[in-house]
Length: 119
Image 1 (cartoon, one colour):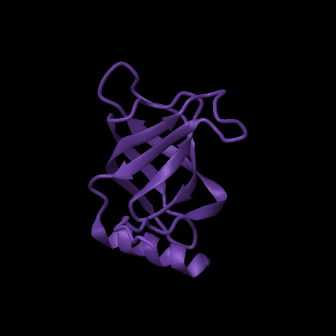
Image 2: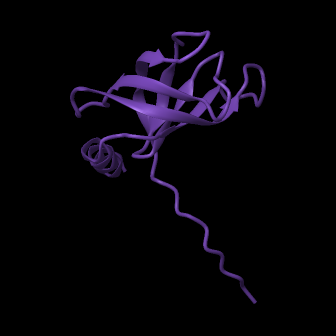
């Protein structure tokens, strides 16, 4: 007997050929910026590799270039949904999973199309 579950279907993600450099991250608090880069992206979020990830639940303003051949940059509010501290979970990189909060729908649709075109 098999049991079916109603698990949510995750967005398709695509590993990037060249990492996206995170241009600006604006935090409200002690640390005004953080350095990182993204290695995968979807319409709902991205992974940012960084040696000093932010705590889950914190929200930040993020600005980054869209992956080629898309053009331009986007700025949106994001929430940290998980983090992987430096030195843990080897061989994986330290970083954090970000959920886009107010990504413009047009950009979300472009990212979704871009991911599907890469497969």
